[in-house]
Every structure is written in C-alpha cells, then in structure tokens.
Image 1 (cartoon, rainbow, N blue to C red):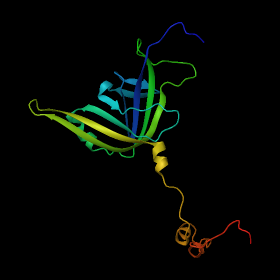
Image 2 (image 1 turned 135 degrees about the horizontal axis):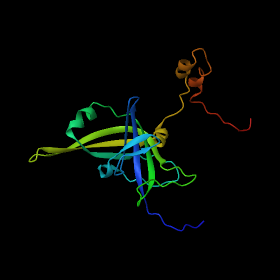
Image 3 (image 1 turned 180 degrees about the horizontal axis):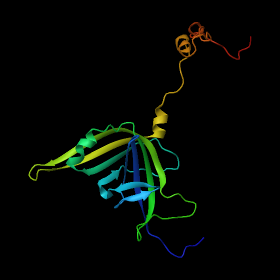
Image 4 (image 1 turned 90 degrees about the horizontal axis):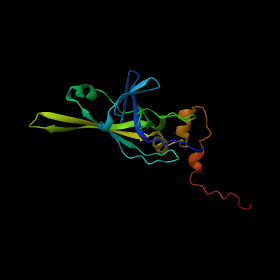
Length: 192
C-alpha cells in the first residue's frame, strides 16, 4: 500500500492515577488539555517527565519514575494530605499529527494505546526555594512499579507441614507424616 502524503508525527504520554474511588489524577505531557474517551487530561507540557522507557515487545517488570514540577505553594496542603501509595496507574501513548495537533486516526489501530500499567509504590516532594525573590518551586516524584514486576516478586505456594495444613484444613491429617519423612532417602526408580 503506497501513501501519497507523508505525515509528521509526535507522541505524547497520558497518565491516569486512580488514588481512591473519589480522586483520579489525569495529566499529560501534551501542551494543552485533551479529552480521550470522556476523560480530560490536564496538559502539563514540559512540567511532566518520565524516565526513558525502552520499547519492548514483551511486558517488562521495570519501574518508571514520573516527575511533575511547577506545583504552586497554594496546592501543597492538598498534595501532602493525600496518600498516593497503592494507587493504580495507567499510562497511554498517543500519536499526534504535528501540523494539525490532533490525534492520528487509523482504521483498526487504537490511539492512544495503553503503554504501561502499574501501582504507585512511593512518592516524594522536593522544594527549590529562592530566598531573594521569596518564591519556591515544588516537584513531586512518583515511583511506579509495573504490574509485571510485582507479579514476578510475588511468592506463591505454601509450606507442606502439618501446622500449615491444619491452618487451611483443620481435619486433614495428610501432612502429619511429613516431619518423619523429611530427612529420609528415597531411591526412586532403583531396582528392588
């Protein structure tokens, strides 16, 4: 299939942080507010930055660091009173036409596409205070773990001993002989 025109494109990242049932933060590195699927993303432009994400075919367990700067002093009380840890985070990447500034629409392609899903594990605030002008600049740094990374770190299974067996099944005696068999040698497959 040949195209007669070339389209200059750029990508922008859209972040959705679901803090609780009543508070969802939505913002992007786009230069203006943009609505996608009836969700309004506040355009922060260069005030938002992310750590570089390698483009991988497989889902990766890497974490990302999201930085939002330019937080006014008047908003610091509401920022500090919110616990962000454990919040669900979704990151979408949209492809835009540079000339029109609108999202590129292609049949059969979802745009923007979900690029990352994770859990906010930590956050911190840094303040740069300029004493002569009596002004300050606040920056929030979010650390977000990938859901894949969280699943890779999860320990599964359970111990096979009488105590743990009784905890889950109080009347089951199937593990009662495990301590006696624990240090025994079994020659499986050896001739008798």
